[in-house]
Length: 111
Length: 117
Image 1 (tube, rainbow over the protein chains, first blue to last red):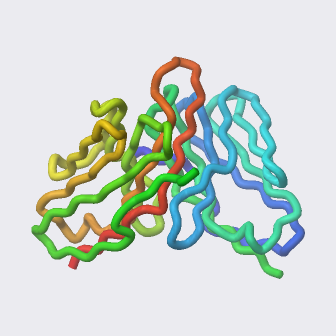
Image 2 (image 1 turned 60 degrees about the horizontal axis):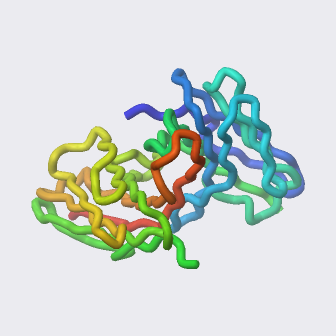
Image 3 (image 1 turned 120 degrees about the vertical axis):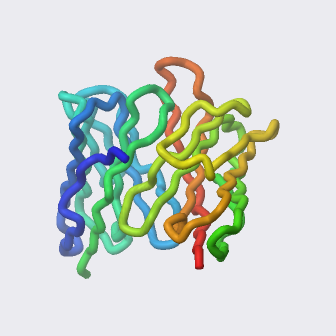
């Protein structure tokens, strides 16, 4: 099935560093969401974006909805060990429609 | 408030058997969606239900079926299990589907880990 493009597959950073992830698609989405998944758990919603160009923050996390509606970015500032996990982007074409996910990026934080 | 709850947490079946997975949405949420997540991949959409009616279906064979009950809980059924059905099955709920511009993010449960031997 269709998936959004997330790369690289894995990222390794030092505690305290900032990290940026992006997500791209060949199709337009009207809603972009970022989820984090820890081992043995379901995805947890981090940020939801509903308007092209929108920039939204949630604590140390900031995400942007690309103007073309075909991409989104997630930034994590001042990383800490609990930021370790898999970060998924997801898109929706219509309000409350199905989610289309990327393959995820596994983030490792070195103390 | 309790989040999305799924049962069982783990399940082991053999090829050819059938399985029923259960999901209780967040209180007040009327829409339930099911996703399949195989190792190393993002979740793939299977079904969406709202007010007991199917509102969306992903690219899965007819062996997969689901239903939603009057209390908004849901079941996912899979018949004639194959080895490739081994995956984490996730349920997500959202408040409603109504309202063209209503923003209703989906919240996930911790899933049922299904292993086929």
